[in-house]
Length: 279
Ligand SMILES: [Zn+2]
Image (cartoon, rainbow, N blue to C red; front, side, top):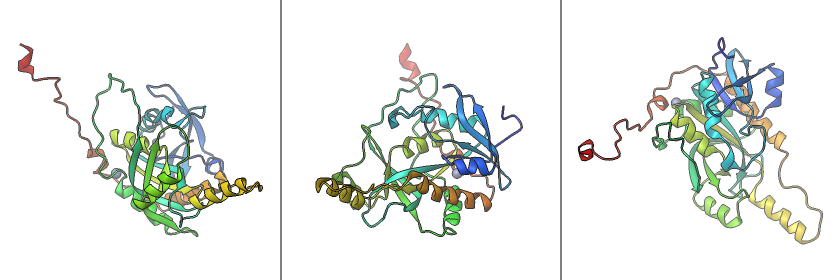
């Protein structure tokens, strides 16, 4: 399948333009969870890349049912050890309008996440003090500075995993007070799964709505007016993250990261209780 193709880097992104313009080829990557069909490979500016078309396996499901482990395993099985996630996110700061773009630097997990760990696999807690690979993030920042629009660096992503809904005003006020930038439902566990697999991971995000716009829209509904949609077209939002990725690939410098591959807190000596106690 991918025998003669080793991707230098993988992306999780839904960009029809990139797939068409660079004539990427669709391939199926097998994983222990079953095949992943939404994989595209090829060269972009001479860099061998793997693009995974979004996070949903055929059906759109609530975020807690997305199989993040499977996507990360597909990246790993393809032989890539670097991954950039692209996100469409919600706005928090009333001064940042929809369409704002961010390079992620840290994340906060809010709410509960339920997983059923497959006990055939060993378990360890991911070391997430610095959730994103600093070398990859640096290259994304360099690309971002060449954009014709502003990109906010050092952004904090709040991962909200609760019942599927958009945030309340009270939640946004709280996040804003904390100085967090954007909110979404997928960066964690994706970043965590990447770290558990020693994959260098970084993220960029584009904001599809903003608190003011959401408020104004509800007010127009209350006044019985025809409301103007408060979300920017998702495709035009994604164009901006795609532009950053293309610039990133144009300037891409290969590197070996000694940090992410070593950041594991594996305890191979785990015993349920001390061996002496068996007697
Ligand atoms: Zn790294």
